[in-house]
Length: 143
Image (cartoon, rainbow, N blue to C red; front, side, top):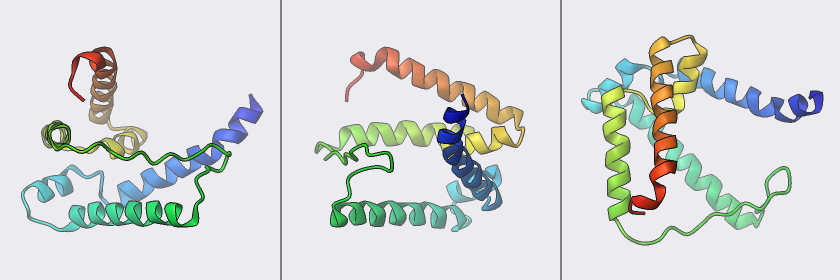
């Protein structure tokens, strides 16, 4: 048990730091998200664009250096996505409608639960239910 705690503690710590940054950077703020959807503020767009740039740069570094192993030795696979726009459009619409209705991106949900938000607990329960439902219906929906 102690070995498991030591093994997973760095991930818990990283998650706590990430949640703290999300809350202090106001990425978990319903008002900031609404400002973004109403095109009243660049704040959230700046966060999103910096996340895209960070992901792009780190993926390119992984490819350039040839390091395709994680810290515990597992191979890192970066799959090539199949061409076609329909799946991306449906997925983006589903994600965007959910984000617009709830007013919250999935990432900050855990940070808000950690802050004691009852509303975020409801959102988390819905997200977990939706994930379970997708797993149950995965063979019946287009991919």
